[in-house]
Length: 274
Image (cartoon, rainbow, N blue to C red; front, top):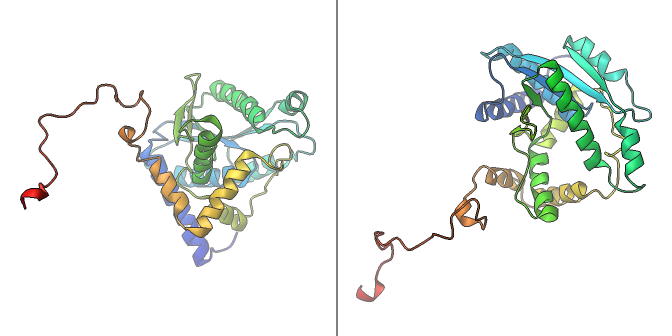
């Protein structure tokens, strides 16, 4: 690829800076880590790999990168694309073959959303493989917009204030998941993917399904962003500024024993005596 334009250079620097801040803020990568970078063949995971490979060159710590893709045996999956790309990069990689496609098609009725089951099957397989290769961190390509969308999905459909944390210890206790793009927005990632010309592999199983709940939430957020630029970023910042006493979760704040503080000085002026 030739010399970057001014705007492309700014975009690259911004993504690297934001990812670097996320990695530092949540101590995502430590000296000696073996980071399993999960590649789907989409814009997000390609961008994540690109950014992490840059960090590997310039960071004051040493860490390994192992790229891993899961071939779920979807019909028409271009199995040659990722190996060719990763060989050209010179990065260590593995292709994990697991026919989850047949399982999903068998269990999910035609026309119903396959994303949830597909994601669980993929996640379980990748957790197991991370353990097998001795990976200390598993990097996923979710970005800021994914995190905000998940927050609203859980609020609207599950009745919980829950999103995607930038760093997470898996339920099995044996895997630590990191999301280096947590501070990056989807628009920038799309623009970066376009000018880098990553060999995108579309998801024909779930990504093209109509009327997904996530797409409804995405459309809602995009409409808000058009009307009030910066709203998505403000919502994301709110996830970093939680005030338990202003919510209603009794597990997070002791409302039961909340009493008047007899020693507190009055904060109000007695206007009657003025």
